[in-house]
Every structure is written in structure tokens, then in C-alpha cells.
Length: 255
Length: 348
Image (cartoon, rainbow over all chains, first blue to last red):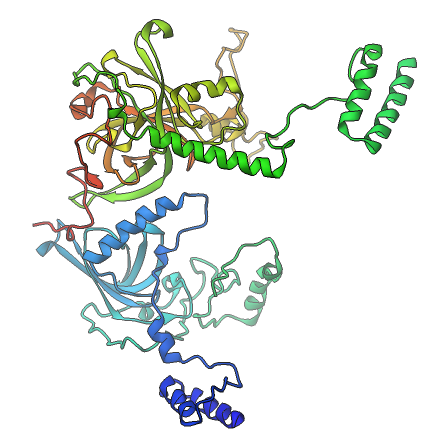
């Protein structure tokens, strides 16, 4: 009985998005009232998890230091107050955004820019994000402050993640990977779906680059290195395999 | 030569004593022989921490008693206006009022209504009380002085003589005690608490604090000397001062800039504007940067600069009383500051 119950549960778990947990409950209710604990570990329903998942913007996480938490509390109050009046959507590095700012010297006093988010920096009210686009064969990067009152609107045209946290290597990639149409239509994204990860491997311009992206310290997965084997092997010389065994090093343990 | 032998035997005896007994017995052994030798063969350290010779129960009890005492003292000082305050006078353009001791929390960006960004420092006024009044004649100066204390700290590691000031004022022990030169119409009774609302947005303020200590530094970092080139034949000379004087003077002038201890000295930032006051947490948002590291204690007072005389008109005089008639909102903003409750800035 218990074994059969377990097998049914397992089968239900495989396409977990299509079966809700109510199905599992019904199977148990069909049996006599005596409570049977699940024989295998309880299977987590992915859809429920997604509903419970909430995006935490990285600028809310205070940096490590000896600052009084009261200072971060005051900053967070201001950030939340700003978010109540102005909507800052959820976005990641690699998403395509359109930002309208107030500009006293422009026609119509507003300035609209579309680009791919290359990096997100700063903590607290000074949080910034950099958008990159290629306009008339000229690469343009603009760094915006998330909480600046001059920003009128932020729209996410395409919400997606990339293989890396930092896409600064797009500066040395072929310009086609950084060009986005200024009048791009927003791509719809449903709330309950997971954020799609774009596993695009970018082709680079010939070397020299602004940074030696092939070296292991940058840990870049989104470049298709077409370099000779000799260069790739030489880059591995700067690998520090002892880092992961360093017991005094501080690292992120949140996951 | 004979003395060396005596010393060696004494040393052996001390070591034996230490192995068997403990530091106390070794000390008595030394003092027993000191009249023969004329000095103690082993240095005696008297310094202990306050609870070294107390039992754990007593330590816990003392800590709780101190905390309760602090709470009682702070609570008793919450209503200064009902406590026979000293005469409250009106503000005159010549009056100089007290300042405040605050804790530097950190820095933050703010924006003005025209969209310009500025950086501000947050200063939290934590447990600030007036400690003592020294009259003009007593202090021997030109004005009366008021001693003001900052953050509360533990009462145990200070001597009785130093704790006298705090006991007379009926106030917990403070980490920083500063003097403010004050005119006679602005004197305040010792024990009065001072709050961040003592300042108002739009006022100009001077902030004094000890700069971050950098230790012993060379002449390039300390005084900004250019040093010497890195290559082209320089032998072992890249960050040195070079010549320190001429030949005719045949001496070095006093005050010559040379390497030495840098930082950890009192410095003042003048003419800083107050952008915002938070009355609930007692935080002052002051323009620009302020000397000192995070969480250091800082002395804040009205500007001495004559240019800003008009900005500091009609302040709360002699100070802001929390139990008075004035009920302030939680946040006070300067008129130019962009508040986050407003919609985004537009240029018409």
C-alpha cells in the first residue's frame, strides 16, 4: 500500500508543473482515514515554490561592515517610499530595458534610452545599473541611478538572465550582440514562469580586448572562445585552484 | 659578578615559587628581597580588568544594577521643563548656544528638487546630556562654558574622581565629554537632554571630530610631496623628502614637514548645511563629509562663519525641549530637498 502510494507520488512529481499538490492529497484521502506518513521524502511542488518566490533586488542587501544597522534601516525606508510612488520593476543583468529620464536640454524635456543591462552596482539609495546599446555604429553605455528622481519610467522590454553576472565583455564582442532596436516591442512574460536563462555564447572581436576575458578569474561562461589551444592553456596558468579550499576566505553561503 | 649569581639564584627561587604558588607569592618573594637588591627583580603589573577578582554572580548583578540605574537616570531627565529649569531667554543675534555630541553613522545620497545629487552624512544624537556649567570667572576664559557628554558607556573602568561629574549631574557615564563656549543667556541646567531637533533644516553647522588614524606615514602620503622618479638611475630613493634645508641657514626650521604619525587629531569641517532632521531616531543629515570613521563621536555646533549669519536666525533657544509645547513631525526637510513622497522631477 505504502509502496504503491510512493510510486504514484513519484510519477506525479516528474511533470510537477502540471500536477498540483491537491492530486496527491486526493490519493491519500481515497484510502481509509488512518494517516500514512509518506514513505519517501516529501516532494516539493515547483509551482507552489514559484508562487512563494519573491525577487529581492540586490541593492537591499547591506554590505558587510561595521556600520550601524540603523543607517541601513533609514536608507531602506527611503527606498521603499520611493518604490511606493514609482515602480521599479524586477530585472536582471542581461534584460533589455527602456528608461525615460527628465532632461532639461532635450526636446519634450524627456530622454528615452533602450539597452541591455550590463551590470548592477551599488547598495542602498546609490544603486546603479548600466545600459548598453549600439546607436549608428557607436557603442553607448549609460549608467542610471535606480532611485534618482529624474527617472520618469523604467520598462522591462525583455526579462531574461544570462550566464554571467557581469556582461562588460560585450564591449569586446561583435557589435551585433549589443544592438537593440530603440522601438522594440516588449516581450510578454508570465508571472508564474521561471526567468529564462539565455545560454547565448557571444563571438568576440579579434584580440587585444579591454580585459583578458579568457582568464579564469573572470569566470565567464557566455563567450565562445575561438582562441588557439595554446592561449587557452596559457590562461589556465592564472587559475587559483586552492581558493575553494581556503578556510579563512569569506564567501556567499546563502545558497 | 657576585650580584649576577644572586640574581640567578633569585630568579630560580621566583620560578619555583611561580610553579608552585602563583603570581601573588612570587611578588611577596621579590618584595622580601628588594631591600637587599634595591629593585624588584621581576616587573609587577597591577592593572586588572574590573571583574577579574569578582565572582560570576556578582558580575551579573553589577551589570544588571548598572543597566537599571542608567534607565532610571535617563527616565528622570526626560522632562527638563518641569524640573526647575534655569531661566529661558530669547535668542539675540549675538547669542551663542550649545552644540551637540553625535555618532557618525555613515553617508547617503540625496537629491534636490531640481534633480541635482548631493552626498550627506548621517549623525545620530545618542544619549546627549548637559553635564556641567562652568561660569566665566571659574573657567578664566571670555565666555561661560557648558560641558556636554555623548554616548552612554559602562561605568566600571573609570576611576571615582572621573565619575564625579556624571554623578553630580545624575546622568550615566558618557564616552565623549566636550566643552562649548556659550553666552550667558544660553546656559542650561546640567542634566538636560539634548536632541537632534536642537538643529533645524536649513541651518549651517560646523562638525569637529578626530580624523582616521593612519599611523606612522611617510612624507608623500602625509604632506603630499612628489618623491622621486621610479627609474632613470635613482638609487634607493623613490619616496624620500630630498633636501630639508639650505646651507646658509645651517639648521632645520622648526615645523619642517617630515614623516610622522598621521591622523587621529581633531579637525573641523566648516559651513555644512543641515538637510533633514529625523526626530524619532534623532538623526541629523549634514551636507558633505565629516572627519572621523563610522561610529565615531562628533561635536556639532552652529557655524562660526560670518557669511552664514542669516541662515541661523531664530533657532530653538537655549535648546529644544521634548516636553515643551512644540510638537514636531517625525521628519523635517529642507525646502530644496526632494522628498520621496513626491512624484518624479520634471522640467516644464
